[in-house]
Image: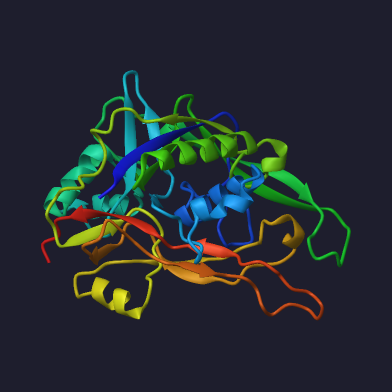
Length: 340
């Protein structure tokens, strides 16, 4: 087992996190791990380190000795921080029989660190109405769900297709964080030097921005390594099941079959989108389905998953993408004591 570290991303400008959907009027709340892996790789190359890409990546495009979670929200309190995790599927229920409360629970996305560790230990969490605060589950009295707000703004664009030059109006939802709050990432690293490499790449991305509309100053942030890790997931728990904190793509059919049994719980998500390399901006990548964060698998590994080349092949005559377009499905897994 390596060392688990965390970095806080404190945003100084609005943020839009897109998906494979073609519209922009809804932003995701998290940035998925595959996008973060790709952004860090691009940052490495942008800093002139492409010749040393083998320090960062293996030949198959997988990160070498580093496993990242997706980016999740954190809340700045008067003293300290409140960190949130994806809710492992079907582990939260009402403390008493209450149909209205059950419906509210279904709309939640995140659980705070203290309650996440309770789910790890017991495999379930029973909550009352006072623990439900919009998309978040927490009993922290300081927490204000308005730390993350959303606003929809009109934007203008010229269509990518080139068939028409008429300007189109579209709407984009932007996320705004309360000062001091933002998103964080967990990283499991095998070597100390990888921590400084990772922080340097995140700092570069903070100056360039992440998400959509970076060219107009969106998605800018500062980076801070988290010093106190007492809130982090329990890694030493003895349990037969684990939940994935990143998007997960099995390495092969054998691994997939070993992870799935009658108690396994999961959702799938389609990943693809536009190529972001300058020479190929008008091309779409191929798509792949991955396991969404918060699944439950019969797994004994701290990390697992494969990278896949989504380089498009079906292009017009005379057009081709000459370099691989890797998407990482390498996921960080943490124990859950599921009573199967």
